[in-house]
Amino acid sequence: MKPLKFQHGFADVILIVIVAILVAGLGGYVYYRQQQANKTYNAAGNGVVVATNTKKPAAKTTTSATTSTATQALPLVLDCPNDSSHQPSIKPTGLELTCADAGTNAENLAWSTWTQTAAAATGDVKAHICQPDCASSTTYKTFSASFALSGLKTVSDKTYFQTLTVTYSGANPDGKNPETFTMAMP
Image (tube, rainbow, N blue to C red; front, side, top):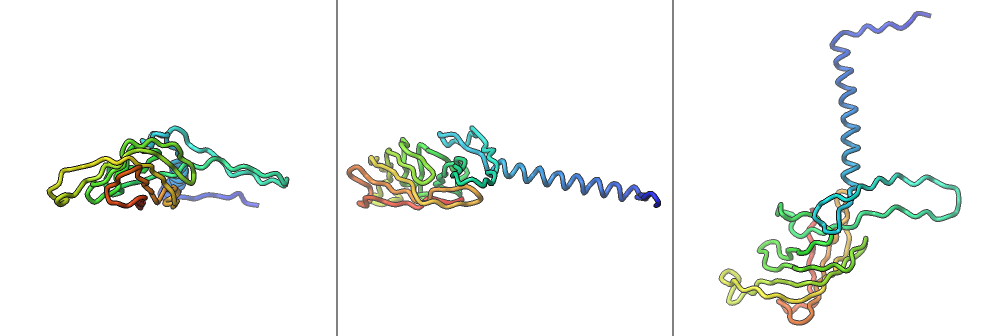
């Protein structure tokens, strides 16, 4: 039996090295994207990463015992996606409810609950009062309210609340009680 002889030219060796580097780089990029998708943000919702989920797929078992799954990242909320100052967050202290004119805002939000399925807060709605008309009015009024986030939608491996229901404690800006807002999606 004859030994194998490799007769590669300089260009062939360079090509093999380039392919190896590209394959290694792609693997690193895939790992990076997986890590970004698994980040968990702090309760203030200001984008500071406090932990990265490093969960691995559960091993298959032949026993009949139930296996609990790892805790999922909490849903995010986004108010105005076309404004770079607005980022998806958890437990924001304020939300812009009318993105087109910023005429209605939720402020001073104090979240009592934020789970995988719902969130609840109390706070204020600051509304632009359009009298005699919106263009000339500079009047804003504040109304006490409770807030409930619900309805989930997953976009790019992240879950977002879709619906904000505002229930006013007394007077309200539009005579609607409760009032429902559709939250933005990225």
